[in-house]
Amino acid sequence: MRARITVRLKKGLLNPEAKTIQRSLELLGYKNISGFDTERVFLIDLDVESAEKARREVEEMCRRILVNPVIEEYTIHIE
Image (tube, rainbow, N blue to C red; front, side, top):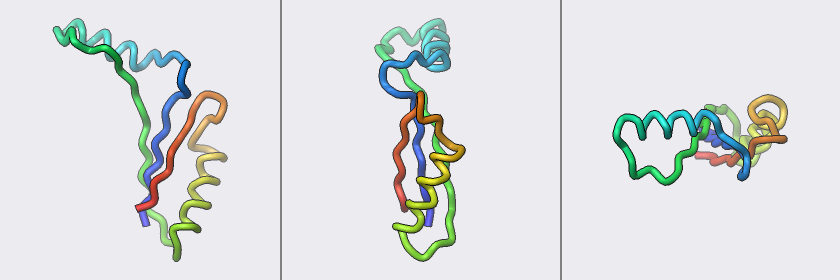
């Protein structure tokens, strides 16, 4: 099974990386950008017998190392 974890900053927090990229795009002539954001995606292949077990393991991974819960939120999709 494959797990896809998408991690993004919580709403309302400043995203300096996204702001820098947006400014760079505008300097290159792309003037119609009204908003820009970034996300991280982790793809993890798991050898487990059920989607439920995969989700439990991935949740634990997110809590322990992949996500900073103070400033980030995440979604998990098991494929």
